[in-house]
Length: 380
Image (cartoon, rainbow, N blue to C red; front, side, top):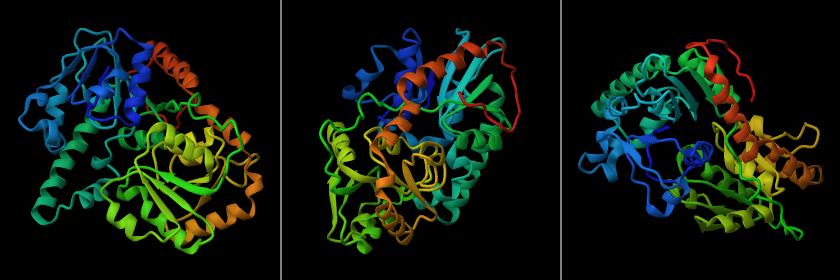
């Protein structure tokens, strides 16, 4: 198994833990491993093989700043002794060196976003200007060329959504099977007692593309409703400045409190364009409908208000006005969104279904051609 890096726990690490559970004897390779001990237990007791980047002074705190070195570092990982390599990649893991006769199966969370379609947003976020920005552009040009050229090292791709399968094709001219990531529908369940449905709820890391500021600002025009906001991040100043008196901030919630807030919510608010978006599915698994920006993979994971048995409502722009209008429209037809329908929809993305689909992807890849360029992805 090859993973980009280990330093905190997120959606990619959830996937990694599930895949390692399917193949408990697999060895694990990664650029750097700075995972806190409290989180490491979820990966099981195994040796982690790292690149030389692990030993660069200051890497523990600043390894992301060493981005120009990532191509050389991933190619230093020695996986020559294995017949099958599985990479879980959102950056350079898919570019590991392989030899003739080795199978390399890539579960692509996304092609490297900062080298491809989100480059401008990435450079704006890190605040580079002038000569530094031009230098960064050259580095990202090199990374893009490297990323595209090493796609040929992959025997077969899988993507986390049809949205990402299309991006894989646009970036690499490669077909991809779609295997949706696992959602813990055994943990995120509807409440035993009747839910209060007293508030709206959103939770995420507060970074610009999540547009938590727009969600918060929308409730200035919804004085009769309360919004509860969980999480934290670099956008804290902007988010808090947008809030009116009917917005309550909780900070980052433990998992049990997050589930409780989702269970009690009238709806979960989501304003990002995501590659998959697990939080809206966790909310649906709790029987809670979702009001979401109608772009990205949520179009695959939420049944909109025009569908039979709808589980959510979409808004067309990432603006406070559009979100407020969507909340009003949701309130007017709130009875249409049944908790049972939300739960049923979420079960399409259960952990059990992920395990079955992923094992089939690996087992079926023996006869896969080294390069397949078709514009559509097959659902698994």
